[in-house]
Length: 263
Image (cartoon, rainbow, N blue to C red; front, side, top):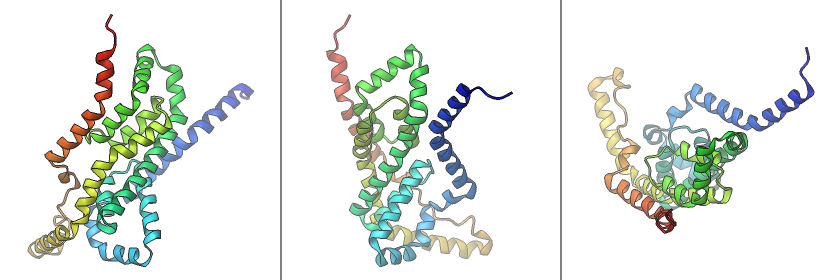
């Protein structure tokens, strides 16, 4: 029994719509299966810092382009390690150039996720949304700039989720890109500045690492690792500052709500 022409056409339309999402998920699964995400650590950066600096010294422009492309791929594939890459950018290129490159790479990667989510699932969600979800989408779109800026500034929300949700909620492309760039600037430059002064920290960690190996012997390689956690850079003061900026971003929403006529 052969499929009807209408069903075949519908299948082709869905495949055309979903193939970018399928390709993205397949690439993500491949990266995790190969274990490449395990190389995005401070320890790997410390071990290869001389080789990386030699590469950058030989061709700075190409190295910067590779860094931006790698950052975009990490964000698009939702691979953990964005904070390490931002630190690496500040460490290898300086806080200003490294921070700017991180912002560009993160924005490109986030935009890829947004476009794929919007084209693959956004229209389907809009068509099948119930009354509550439709109202939520409409309300979010009305103040999308303020909401997205808040979500970008406050670091308690997973970056991949903030990349994905706007594509499903019908946010415009321009609003998404603008809020992504503006929202990640404070945190990115905070990490890049930390990376810019990482040399002394790496030297201290290497000394502690060698001391640990000397005590435990060759079998202690797994137990003796670099202990610097990028998450430790999110100090209470930095988090408080980012939350304060996020609340400022919500002021227009609050003003609109209070000025709204009451029934």
